[in-house]
Length: 408
Image (cartoon, rainbow, N blue to C red; front, side, top):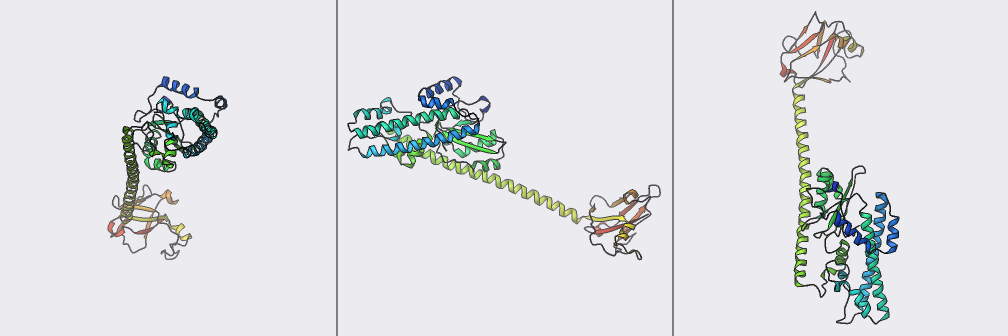
């Protein structure tokens, strides 16, 4: 839900030189805080004395207070509509924008008090008084929300013309939180970014790496309107309202603002497309890496000799070799899990201890379709007791599987 705030300060450790962070200063922030508090009622001050202390309690309290602001605002808008409907042609009406705009003159800001003094109808005087009460209640809640928000660990940037909520959120997650773009996009897609940014708005962010949670919201900052006022004005088509104090310059500025909003929307779409492109490029790189790996694996299998070497006595006991003719009898379940890459080497060295022998006196290469002396040779060493299989015709053995029966 959108938060309403007039001004805040930010911890120095959370300021980023690469981002547009509010530069108000500690002294100004303190003055503004005192000003905000000076408008609070005794009831609000009493509520603040028992303010929550943990982030979870703060967020719960903020959600409740923002809901009360929304409810009070809706009720006040209905009262304004009722009052305006009772006015005769030429009589002064109440514009919602002039109640909460910060850039109005003193005369404009006192419109409710003036109407209260001039109104003769008792019932409508009561209605105006109720609207004043609603306005003061909202301002008190805004001040309370301000105090609660200042206790959160969130950081903010000041929106400029043309900025989009999505772009600023992506920049925070990739620059400050050090997340990759794909992860940042996933988190941004999970939060509300429906607010229209005005120049001067504060856009707030907080990422909790332990819980892997992200929140972001918009407050008024130095902009002329609160996000709540803009949203309500849009919903009730109040953005077209113009009171007597507005000049032609204001109308032109509003037109520029609409154009800037459209540009911001296009920039937002561009940012989303750029993020999608980055994800596709990453996927392409992964696919190319997999293709390269599979190509290398295929080349290895096509150029290697796969073999299983085992003690001859063990092979007979397993029924792989015939005990009479010493022929291959059954090789089911036999794994040819050792490979010789014939592009790099053409010999296999066999040591006796590997096969539980004192020395190796003979080695048989099976099946017997390969001819010793023409396709391969067997060399044995009396000194070491080892044996060496030398491939004479590598092309003949590429991609083949053979059984080496080792005897002592």
